[in-house]
Amino acid sequence: MNYFSLNKKAPNVDFKTATILGQAPDKGLYFPERIPVLDADFFNNIENISNEEIAYKVIAPYVGNTIPENALRRIVKETIDFPLPLVNINDNISSLELFHGPTLAFKDIGARFMSRCLGYFSKERSEKVTVLVATSGDTGGAVANGFYDVPGVEVVILYPSGKVSEVQEKQMTTLGKNIHALEISGNFDDCQALVKQAFADDDLTKKMFLTSANSINVARWLPQQFYYFFAWKQWADKKNPPVISVPSGNFGNICAGLLAHKSGLPVKHFIAACNANDVVTRYLQTEKYEPRQAVATLSNAMDVGSPSNFVRILELFQHKFSDLKDKISSTSISDDDTVATIKKVYATDKYLLDPHGAVGYISLEQYLQQHSSEKGFILETAHPVKFSDSVEKITGEKINMDVPANGPKKTVKMKPDYKELVEFLEKK
Image 1: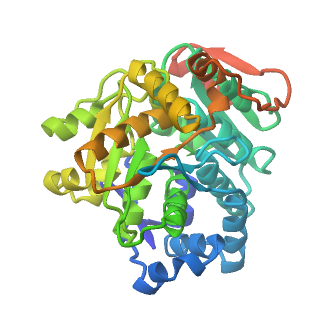
Image 2: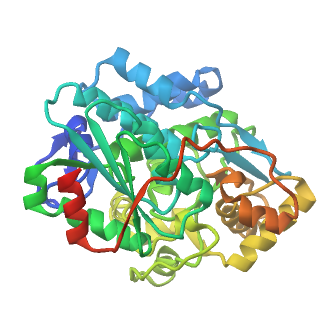
């Protein structure tokens, strides 16, 4: 399997090179040259196939011969070594709980897979690899945990000061060793712009080997398909595929689901559930793509005004707007409605949503009101304890779960100034 740049001005590369580079030399995102389609027997017998085997069959064509089968099977096993249950909330809506990993967020899957792949590849390299990543919340903790103490890899995480939860901040700022956190006085888009500028800086990339751990990296993005297949394995009514509502920020998660669907996974419809950052919602209404400055919301990990992965979604549908709109709808949910949904679902169904899951829930609920014969599930992308301050205030009850910290907070405070970032990277 080779990968091409969506900017179409760079050579095609294999999985190893795409993973190490993160972004193509022409600044485009890598995209697989073909989408493998799984055979009917795989789906007909999926309930009898182990999760490890499902994940291996899904990812093996994308990896090709860059990682031997025994090593890839080990990486896959370590990646999904925690539960990913599909839990009924009520008769019509279920929750795919993706928060049972080490940092209590869905990004554990992608981060664990990528860190192990990059660790495998780094053994063949003499120079140190620096992973440079921007986060709106959950990516930072997942990447920090996944890459912690990996030989030959340094991690630099940029996050917006005061715009992530206390738990999210602890998870990316207390590890130390090869994990470095930069607290940026701005928003996520400022952080992402700095990272993109670094990758576009030829002088910098000649001095040090940079790669990304955001979902722009194929090794972060592709394994997110796994849990969509696991959900189908658990889906009771195989004759009626689900509607899937995905809390969406940078659009890597829903893009992985759409890729799985293109590989044959049965899905009735996808909902891109957005908060006030509604660039894709507006695009599906107007066919005009107009990124805007991100605004802060309760569902902070989705506070993205210019989602990087949307170009991959356009490529999946060959830029045919009518086909895209037929398979995906999108909603923009306010903080007031998010609060009301957390409160209502907890009171009526005794299920505790986090703010991101709540955005997914109300979006799915609204869709099912117009399509009463359908059923579906949300992706519950983070544990409510990661947002305990807001969730406990909404429900009036304490979340009885301790999140261990690894030590005192260690950050470098920085303005959204590229020169400051370069100085830090060159001194590190």
